[in-house]
Image 1: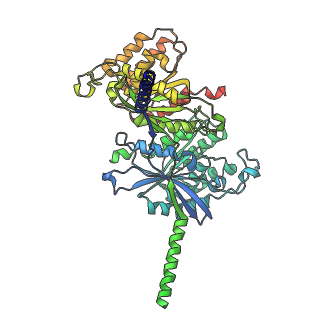
Image 2 (image 1 turned 90 degrees about the vertical axis):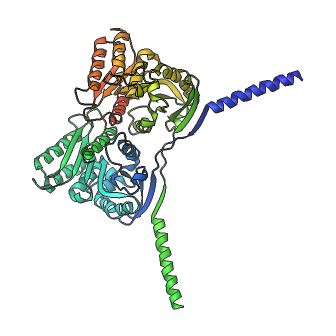
Length: 289
Length: 289
C-alpha cells in the first residue's frame, strides 16, 4: 500500500511537471496579412490565369478609401516581397508610401508573354530555337492586362486610377515595352534588369525611334541592373545605353531613375531594387499629405 | 405559356451567365510559408513571452539538415520581412545564403529590455522620467535569451550552432551591448541605427573601454544609420564615432561593415539594412559550397 501511495505521489508530481510544461510553452499559427489567389479565364490568351492579390488592411477611417495598384510580373517570385514592402512602408509609424494593392501575375508561358518580338536569338545573338520558341506575345499579354485583368481588379477591389507596372528580367523588358507602346496603361514603370539584349537589342532601338526628343511623357520610370558579369557585361552596357538615350531625349515630364547595384546578382537585385523603386515613385507622396 | 417559355429561356441564360462568371473567376486564400507563435513562461523576466518562429521549407534531401538562427528583436515590426528575405535569398535559383530559422521576439516592456543602463536622460541628455522609467534591463533580457529562449528553440527546432543577433534602434543598442558583454552568445551581430545616444553615449564609452586594441574578437558586426536629422545629427555622428573606434582598435578576427543610408528614414532604413546585413554576413557562404 505504501508503495502504491509512493507511486501515486510520483505519478502526481510527474503530471504536474507535464502540466507545467504544457502551460509554460504553447504554439499557435502565425497569421500573415491575408492575400488571395484569383483565377480568371482569359479570352485573349485562351487560358486560365492566376493572379495573387494583396489588399491593405483597412481600419474604420479608411472604409471608403481607394488605393493605387501595382501590377507585378513574375508574381510567383516577388509577390510576397512586394506585399510585405507595401504593408510595412505604409504603416502609420513609417508612412513612406500610401497603402497600395499588389497584383502578382503568375506565369504560364513566360517567354511567350514577356517578350516583345518573335526571336530565336540568345543573349549572344546566336540562334537558340529550344529556349525561345513561341516568343513575341507581349502585345497579347498587355491586351490581357488592359482588357481583362484590370477591369476584373477594378470591379472587385477598391482601386484608384494610379497604377504601376513592375517587372524583372523579361518582366523588365515587358515593362519598358509597355511604356513605349501603351504608355497610358500605367502611371509608373519599373524595369529591374530588363533583358535589353533581346533580339539584338530590339527595345533599345525602339526606345530611340519611338521617343521623340523634347516630347512629353508624364510618367515615372525606374530601371536598374546588378552585377551580371561585371562592368563590361552586356547587361550593364545595355542599361547605360538606355540611360544615355533617355538623357539625350530630354522628355518633358518623364521622371526617371537609374540604379546600378554592383554587389547584387541578377536574382538578389530585385529585393533592393523593388524597394528603391517604390521609394522613388512615392518620394513626393509625404509632401502632399 | 409563351411568356413562361421566354422567362424560362431568360432564366436559363441568366443561369449560364452566372455559371460562366463563376467558372471564369474563382478566388482562394493565398498560402504564405507557415510560421508559428510560441509563448513561453520566462522565470528570469517573470512573465509570458511571445516569439514568432519561421523555419525553412525542407525537402526530402534536407530532412536531417540543421539551420543557423537569427534572433530578431522588435519581432512585431520586422519578423515577416526577415522571414521573407530568408526564404527568397535561400531559394535554389537565388542561393545567396543558407536556409535559416528566424526567431522574432515580441516586446512586452521594450525600454526595460533593450537598454543597458537605468537612465532617465533623453537623446539630448535632458531628464525624461516618463519615457525611460524602468530602463536598464538588457542584462536580464540577454539572460532570458541565453538560458530560456535558446534552449527552448534548440530543443524544438532543427538549429545548428551558428546564431545571429539582430536589432534596430533600442534593439541595435541591445545588439552592441551583447557583443560587448556576452560576445560568445552569437556569431554575428546586426545593429541598425543603434540608439548610441543612450545615457550620454554609454555604449560608445563601453566600446572604447571593453575592446582592447589588437585583441581577438572572431565575430561579424554590421551597423548602419539612415538620415535621422541630416549629416550633423547625433545619430550619424555617433555611428561615425563607433566606426572610428572599431577602426582604431584593430581587433583580430572582427569582420565589420558600416553602411550609411542618407535617403532612408529611421523607420524605412531597416528594410534595406537587414537585407544588406544578411548579404554581408553570408558573403562568403557561396564560396564554401
